[in-house]
Length: 404
Image (cartoon, one colour):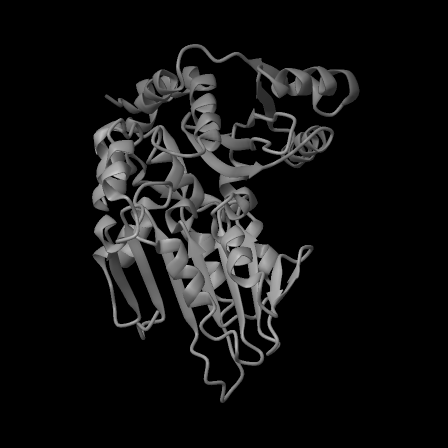
């Protein structure tokens, strides 16, 4: 709370009071008129769980003069200062805060959040000239999660005068029954136990199926010559939708098949899409890639909502029906991924360069290069689906290029 660096991460073991520390830090300037703070977690459910940070704020602030707005999820204090709660559930949720002006950003479980969303939220930090409240970012997190690599790199490995890392250890909290808590962690795998019990920034490198070095060659997705010279466009959908409040994500990947029979990833999306929005989104994406006459297939995983989407679109959409191809996955996800990784290792799969034409890239890479140790794997599923569907082309290209 008293550190002077702009960005501070309190991270490591579970149980040392990270969430309470984060809420305390957010409330430090609640007596200052005009002060605005934002607390963020990955999902709204994460915020609202019993004992989670938003629930804890009600326990602390409910008996005070602070006023809660349940629509805006915001506390307003007698000074006029505000404390808001937000989430970053989808790839574009950070744009929800586009017009926001805050002096304090507080992120709970930072490793669950992609780097590009975190960096975008930093742009919301600003204040009026002469204001005494410092601009601050305070984060709390355990190791692991999709953001493990970038959080470790930014805070633990490379601290600066503006960024600090404070190790969080179980022994920091004298009020926790530590012996009983240690027993609850005994059944975890070695990596997770080291992360939560000892706060070690380790991960299971042996489990990763796709290696970053296999994708060293990149192409510029903003250069339309790649699209114009493509032999065909292929869209792959993992709808993964289920009814209820906790809907899974639908994901799609689009590949260009190049003239040398390599495939170039040109677009990814991941959204929560209930019916009928799901089928509308599938039609819209297909329409964009059909304009040049090179759309060859819209491949849909033929399970769950994918089966319903295939039937609905086949009956109702003249545009997309001729391109629909059901894909029935066989074997375990990891087995399919290892099969697909062969073609990535041979250099037959190209990812785009990181630029404005590929806003999804950071989120995709964090998932792809950590798979299967990830919270969400839907984007990786569509990549694997695309490689396996197009592998006969990749085989031709590999033979032509003399790939091993």
